[in-house]
Length: 186
Image: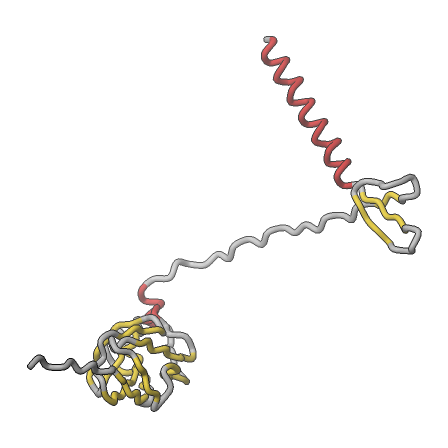
């Protein structure tokens, strides 16, 4: 029985002290110093400070979540297909020379509107007319060990059946890979 009484006493002390602390920390003071500067603080620096009332806190009720039925496969098929207005290789620029002895570089692609992966759309990258990467969803593609010489890249958006929805213009790059000639032993 003493434990319950001690626990009750402890809870009373905790709740009453929290109220005192809350009141103490919500007090604000304003004063003007000898140079005419206005200052604010939660503790009065001297007797001339005026106590201010803390502004009421703004509270809002949460908005209830919208009730909607769960989407099913038939809903996605009924959606109008996305019509793309812009598809371009934004980097590297057309007719750019890339100097990398290992033949590595990245391609960045601009798309408007964003690629609709919910409808099964993906990107396909072609090098010199041959698809080298397909079913991509990222607009940044890293390429490795591209042969030296001039190459044409293009990108296309395909639907889940593989039909081309939109195709970019070709971007020409010149891959420069330096050759180190070794002297032949005599």
